[in-house]
Image (cartoon, rainbow, N blue to C red; front, side, top):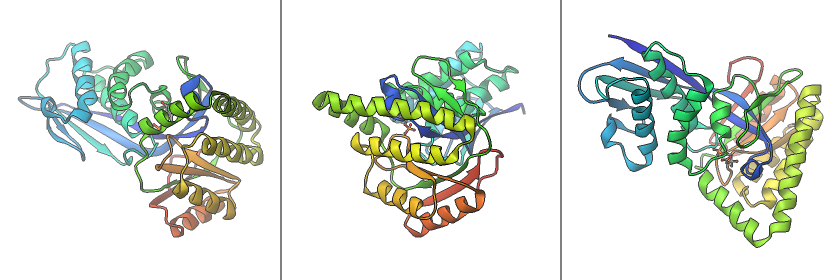
Length: 312
Ligand code: PMV
């Protein structure tokens, strides 16, 4: 039988989440946890298999409507009938932790459908079909997840603009830890919006500061100044706290990471649960921080160097 594969990786937002919704820049980096989508010829209705749902695409639960729409629109575009396929999603990316799992699934899916038809999607084609799935999953996302999970290098992202590759001087040693609690990005984004309406000047000030931090972070990456970058992560976290999107569990892990030798630490993604990241000055230091975070109650912890694909 004919078979095709599509892959995508997850992402971490280094600096700038939430402010990016208001038109400020953000920097995201690839995270080596991966998802694969395997498309095979079969007979009858299009069947979908994943850890979350297995069955015909027409009976998908409401919250997966975006995925079925995305499959249908992509196949329609490729001139394929809506039958005779089996699609299997095999993902190592935990859901709802700010790692971009939904965007990564959609990117892998669209790539696999194109590949099955002997084609490769352009960036524009990829985005337009992934957007269908993402809009259903997130309401009106900034688009940073989609851009980050389909890029092989760190990106500078601004709403409605083409993502730009960010130059880095030397590897980044990053620890990412999962609080184990789902971080509902939609609610976090909504909370910031409410706060903006109540205290526009205060929130505007925070957003401005985050925008400047992202700008400085770009230069720190360019110069390989990891000490400065660490401080910028810490300053970004202060602003995220004042926007109301951090919580006790995240703050505890962030504090722990700093005490264990991190150059800086902050939440990553939507917040209110989900994951935090820490910057280390070596792979060995990242290993130590990661194991300290596990001892302090992290649900899962990973560390890696941005230079290769291995994840510990
Ligand atoms: O999907 P998450 O949890 O990584 O959050 C995306 C970043 C936000 O800025 C909070 C939302 C957005 O749409 O940009």
